[in-house]
Length: 137
Image 1 (cartoon, rainbow, N blue to C red):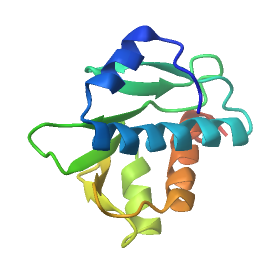
Image 2: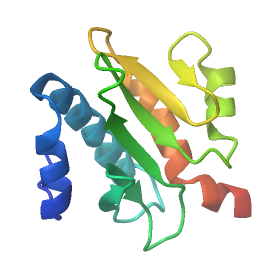
Image 3: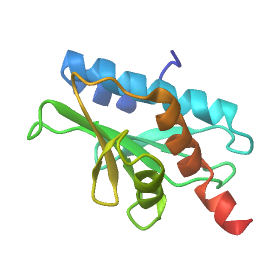
Image 4: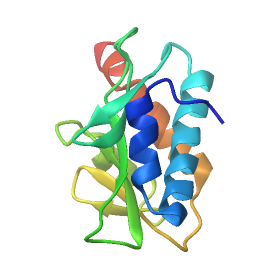
């Protein structure tokens, strides 16, 4: 597991209920592992956006921001958020219509007790982390 570079991000993770923290840490691991395995992404910056952990590609500019989070108003759900101004979630819906639950054009939503298809999710993460690079190509 990658250590936190930012104490504020570590604090944000500690604020989540333990079961959700484990789920969000698993999403975090998929993001970092996918970034490491995807050519041209470079080092990720882990920060907070809207109080939630966010992952950016500032060194290469290759990708679109990914956020992960949990809301008290939906205690059994957690999500991975993508920029709603992109076509990412629409593409994911086409490629994985029955694999994930979606929230509009901005998120993949997970339910606490359900398994996560990490291979399909890694594909989605790689698409987000290379979104700008692929649009330029």
